[in-house]
Length: 317
Length: 89
Image 1 (tube, helix red, strand yellow):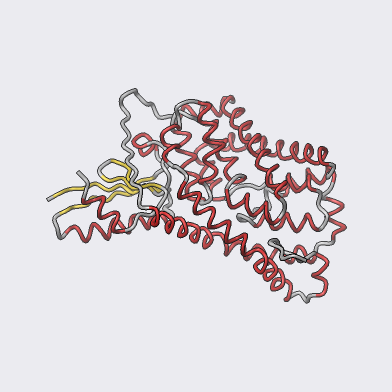
Image 2 (cartoon, one colour; image 1 turned 90 degrees about the horizontal axis):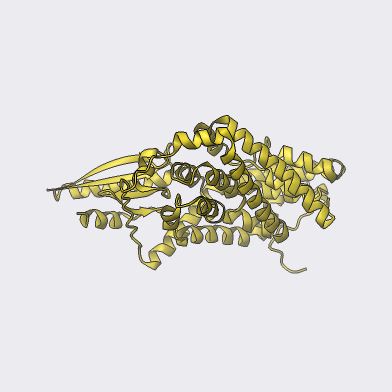
């Protein structure tokens, strides 16, 4: 068999290990096969973050609604590999002329379409799922943004937060200094390393837990509850309360898939993942719970609908 | 004698990257004090209306020297900060 870039252990392989050996074998399996992917993903995330033209967002945000949505959905997620950029961008988009719609679009799109998640999902699960997830998340994010901007609560928050911009009163001075290329490359790698340092500890702990879940969950239960329409519904709901740190949802999804979860349920599961809890708290402080509840509801409805749609159209429900 | 205003903008509570920029500016400020350049350092919340009104949507961490944003989304080195402050008008 050719060298695999994805881990190779099957759930059935675990039966020959004692309980204390499980995490060791599981971690070894992930890192002996997955290290190239992980390394590549972190380097790519660092490079993209460094070399994407960040001034675009400053220049065009707020020029029109359509541009707002386009930037919120299409461009911004590539920058949000680091959670500390997400809330500032969300509030920034809300405060400028773009308003609440694009801000919500951005918020929903960011966790689904960041470079790290795409690469890891594609390599560890399948590129098909990674692609479908992006498209489904894009539709969900734009839909939720448009709907919320039309609700009275949404527009109330928009009015409250919009900065009155008298023409001529704003003269922003942005004179970004670009360091030479070699320095930029180094800083891109440094940022990749920083991301790895932030994410990998949680990822390791997550892997140990997922190792046990994989070893001790009877496939019978997964096949019984995580397939069909019930499977989609259950998968979309457990994604929420079962908060998993970045990338762990991909590993857990992969395990459940091996244990017999339907691909339709897997899509709903991935789409039902909430965002960083600290981020959510910060966001709910700004937009209040009514808006949070609406967008959570829209996101849930969409995760179920896309799960079913994907399952029916590919016959893998 | 020269006064330079340096604004470091990041999220609240501060993240590690924002503090790294602040530290770089502090070190440079300490060094330039002996040459008569006074650096006034201020940390600002990047997600506040004040900052968005002044500069628009920024990437954290951002550094503005004399009210012009010079870097964003990265941590400038001390030498770079020093150069920026020296060349500030």
